[in-house]
Image 1 (cartoon, one colour):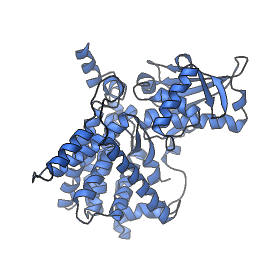
Image 2 (cartoon, rainbow, N blue to C red):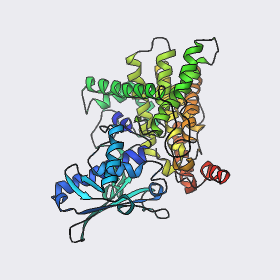
Image 3 (tube, rainbow, N blue to C red):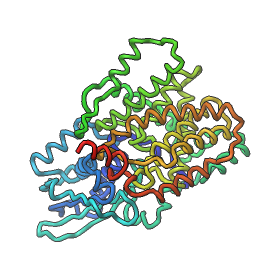
Image 4 (cartoon, rainbow, N blue to C red):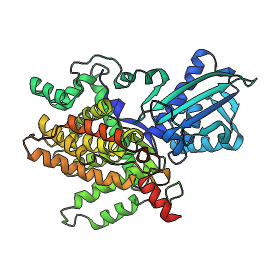
Length: 460
């Protein structure tokens, strides 16, 4: 079973793919399940329980709002961020929501959304349960869901057979489960890594649909960069973090090209900051492969388009296809969930994906691409997820900027070599998984350790 490019790159809203996009999708899925069974009109009350990391950072990561919107039928890739905020506020003001967009029921967020701060469901830290009751108060249906990173969700049945998360079961011409297998396919066939992934995609959709879909994702990323570099003010949540994107853009445009050899890196860090400020503000972003790491691939692609001679749409498409191949390896063999393995699974995997994608469009061989991806993750191993105040702001926004520059360095280093290196990408991914298993839960998106704890202590 092989994942698709469009599994890894999904259009949604901020601030978190696992805490916003996933729970919204789970809520929609549960309501549609009720509709399909004929139980929707029977519902007089619905209760949502959030466990583990979802409970601990449910407000700061936007989970409560996402669930309420999802219960009303809003979907991450379609919802308008501004309209969503208005609908969320309206449901709280009137104490009602339209379940599935059609069935009005009383709703009080204080009693109908329960955040468990010390309890988690067995399969994953990002667990949630929906319970519904009829007019008599009798409980008549429930379902558990897990948000496993990058907007992916599993229900309680799928969680018992987690291989279901590895793909849709469609047979592809070039299946691969490891980087070693991927490079071997390239050697045997003479295909580039991007060609291998494209041929696999053609099983599901036409080549034009693949190309158009990728360019649409890139267009959303570009719009996100533009929005983030033109907005000012303070990010929501109470930390009073200033938006810097617009100010830095104005500074760079006013200075022009000064001859500074690091001029290009200024634009890279600006693009990453802009995307993650938009994410923190609840704007429209693309999971790449998560919202918390959403700025890295757009920033590196922006570098390619701005500064690499001969850059074009074909290169953008090949970048995405190659980056997706690497993301599939992380998703299949480890995790892209900060709540499961820490930020190494989010920023680390995105850095690796961006490094491999850039190496491809810089003319790298499959071996050099694998080397670039390995460098990208190796130097993010052990990265913790410790969001201050439970918000996707500190250290998340700057962390994306730093990882973007790191990805470019990794790609350029790799294409200068011959692809030979001691640590394989497969070994690095396994190490990331093992490190995540060893990591204390405090450093897995709970805001109970690291900067989240020490900054809070200083402020107190």
